[in-house]
Length: 218
Image 1 (cartoon, rainbow, N blue to C red):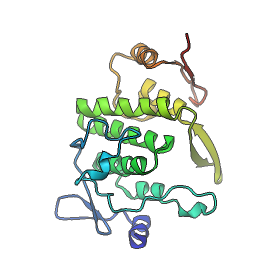
Image 2: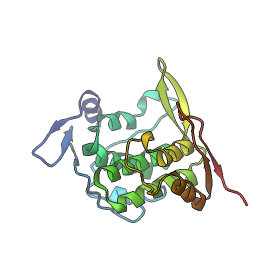
Image 3: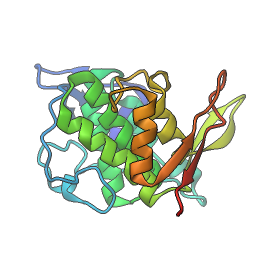
């Protein structure tokens, strides 16, 4: 695993004979066809991705942030080593779904959902579209108050609420650059949020960082 990480940091790997991209001894898929191992693959509480023979990360140690050893985390390093664009979307799904199955967290669920969103954008598969929506909803239902951290401004780290990122990704296509998961425009997005039990006050330009998500109460 140490050699994998070293290679992942320095390179995205090299093309192989056509079956995928190699990072160390791991062959990453470059297609956009996702065969679901089970109905709830990529959703918190379901671990079937760990039984998927197509999962290239089955034997990879994906490590999480540890306050006692901040440098131990490698999941974002592995993510950044995957080729950008559609050829890396399937591998990104497997990375984050594997991390989620091993450690359910809002961050892992959010990036699993985003990878599914990217896969839908690349392939247009309605089953992937449905799974991406389920994964985004799982962030709201299971990890509503969770955050992910971004680094900017000379290395300053700041938290971003995942419920707001989910809402923005679904409401505003420019947030991801991916095809909308919910057809019919913004009113349909707000309607679906209502069905899920939430309301959304959309973020405003230019920064789109002031959106608010509320749990609906009777």
